[in-house]
Image (cartoon, rainbow, N blue to C red; front, side):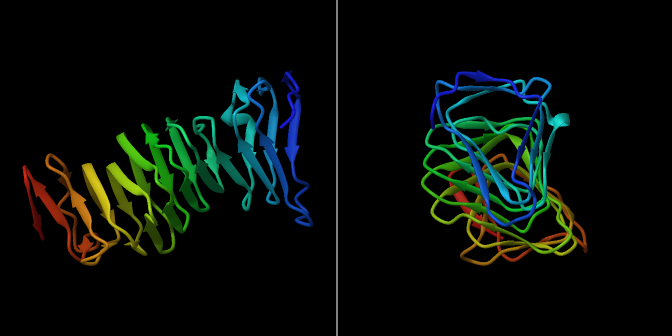
Length: 232
């Protein structure tokens, strides 16, 4: 948490990959800046990179590698467009997630701040979790579930509102908490498994594809029309 001014390393490797001890680099100091212009950034499987209140400039996706088992956590910095193993967002103020974001581990949202997904988040991991008093609101973006094994959506104590949600997983996606959709629900492949408690609600104006024999909502869904909500 000590201020170091501005640094611009040629390369930055976090963790040694041996897994003996987990290494955490917390970019916490608001008076420090990490300039990643030209920096080769590697986060190994035994490491966490925490984007705190420090400034981060010239982030370059093509120069960055997150190994399987690594954790990227965003607390005071907008989520960068990249491919992550485990992605955590633990924020007290509003953050944005723009561009194309790929998550092949787990996704976890904590904290009281909101996360606005304005691009596309491709989620191929296992559990997509919303905790805390904050919310996820992709009022312009899309979340795509495209894993190769069963996936889960869990809200915890948070609020999950999605604009566009796409299900593209032959092993299905299970809804473990309610979710609200205000854009489009697209059923491409595999089913969305719901219950009378863990139910999706399509708000007025939201649309859904007709699905197919291989891709449909398996369970109830709430369809809101003006001031009424109908259960289908």
